[in-house]
Length: 223
Image 1 (cartoon, one colour):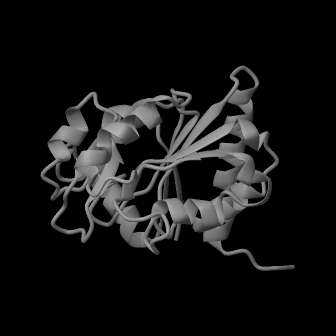
Image 2 (cartoon, rainbow, N blue to C red):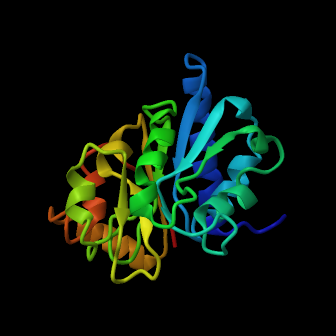
């Protein structure tokens, strides 16, 4: 019998929960929207979800945030989704990226927002990640656009962050809240400690993940 690591088991459990949510919503909606996050943590989840039986042609997928890089770049979240989630039957899903041909996210934000607003909101599921600094999506504590991203009714926000090498685009907190279900997918003791700190306080600027702790948030964690 193959040994399955706790993180792989977590990824499978999350995939099953997301697939069940999508199926449930597709019983009464023509399309269901899934908002995912990038980084290394979700790769086994993407692989597990891609193996789930779903009417993928009725599933829409987009990202919570993205680096303003070409989709072919190594650190593109869109590339990650295409390589690990949109595989096999899941390739029939409609994927909507967060970048455009504009040279900066400030120039492209409006075009991207129009594209995103046309999707099947409220989202069936939003899956958030969290960094060691408490950021989620591209809501970074040191970002000069953090207050805007937390308060605006706009769909997208261009983000410049001293701690990050590339400019980014993120869905606003308001848009990310527009979902039937929110999942937080994190691994490791360090992030568990950050989440405990977040739960113990209320300063959203210090730890932006706090912007989502007041809504029902199912946490998926493994060592």
